[in-house]
Image (cartoon, rainbow, N blue to C red; front, side, top):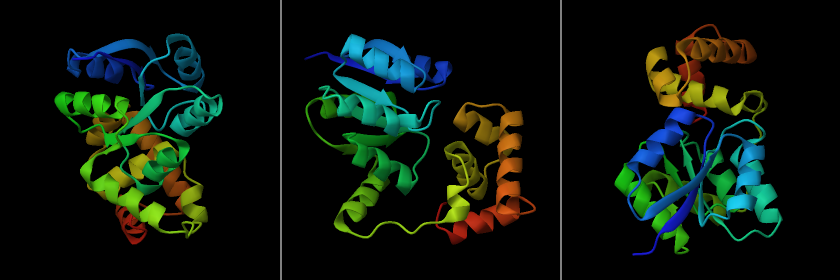
Length: 212
């Protein structure tokens, strides 16, 4: 069995350590990176077969890594690994050149298999995400512009979706690897930007836009 050389790109050290521990023996983790700049530099230096790429992180996110690395002509394959299962995130990184997109609910064995398949040239998606990609590439229409949604940062959108799904602040903090205080700060910011009063109004707002 061949060994696949992997670089893990994620802005949470604890999550990177967890991924390392879960991957099978056919995967060799050659390095880690925590933001766009360190990711681009590490890919150039280490030349991994596959990059496990977080979508949202400091410096511009996964799409910026894809733009800079693939724009330089580097021969490396990307597999997005994210807490977000939003259509715009999935479509954005696939258009950017990633070979697949899986969510962080994936098991170690499933992730190992996904990495191997991507290294072999396959496209890999978590089951419900494949439909987003098929729909996007089957349609020539651009998604409608939503100024209110566009005013939110990617992290604020993640928190908003989890709020709309009924997650408690503590559960959101655990899911996103951030503190409860940071969750509260993001919720306050979203409420202010959308001119809403409470989490129930946030849930209705997100549901109306099919963000849940």
